[in-house]
Amino acid sequence: MSELMRRLWSEEEGQDIAEYAVMLAVILVLVVGTIRLIGTNANTVFSNVASSIQ
Image (cartoon, rainbow, N blue to C red; front, side):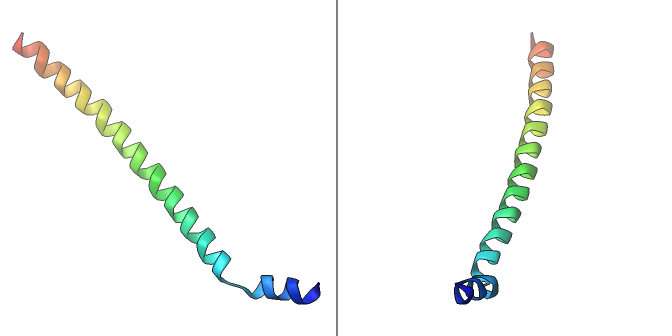
């Protein structure tokens, strides 16, 4: 049992996967936030253009 715990503690592959998962989550939050912000602004611009054409 102690050999298994020592091997799991010294193994670094799981740590790399966790770090990549955290980085991916942060990037996803930034991208989704940016898309929502741009989408809202783009909707406003298109609405203003449409109302000025009519």
